Image (tube, rainbow, N blue to C red; front, top):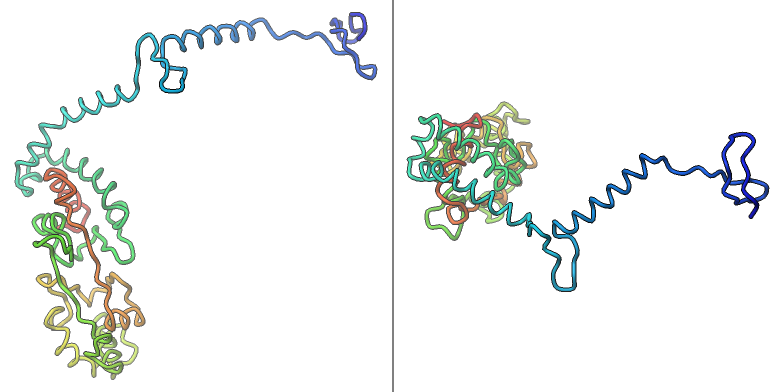
Length: 289
């Protein structure tokens, strides 16, 4: 510690502190900065008094105005629900086909359907209905069970292969290999024939030998030309749109021991208005009929 003196270079006084011949200049904070600091301290004290701020072991200080963000949010949600009530009631009371004919109802249904889809359906079908492996694309015109509003509504309400819903859509493809309905050579032949339906057979002779096997075992569901039958939920085999992959190894596996997808019934999870809004939204994605 040394006596205070004025620095010869800067002209400023020192604090009296010195380390190894280096003296500390006395450079106070700017007054405007100190004023801002003091104002913030005063403001924070006022904030602690007015708003909930300090926790205790069992509760917290309520503040002078007793503000609660959760209560405010609940009020906003109540007001929003009341404002939507007339539209939701109108949608619930209208046939789903009539919604598309009412511009105001359609506008509301599209917004509500998109939000409901993103929350409940996008994890499987992807945003915008783009589809994922094992989950159908909803934005094209290839429908296993039909793409009309009535078809989509039925699927949404009762699901696919949902054992808890008596009205669910159900179809089962035989396990041709696992149950020894067809032998390995027959499965290979019918696989080549299925590939030939989209011009991709690797062995035309073997593909032709699989024609009769297809007629005897597959045509009843998929149709003689493999174009599919919606009554059975049997997909089109000639359009190169595949749910579980369209390469030969994938087709061989599907014929041997098929994968069978399951979709939940939404009638027990979503109310009637949301299901109708979902149907309208899905129908609008580009593949609706």
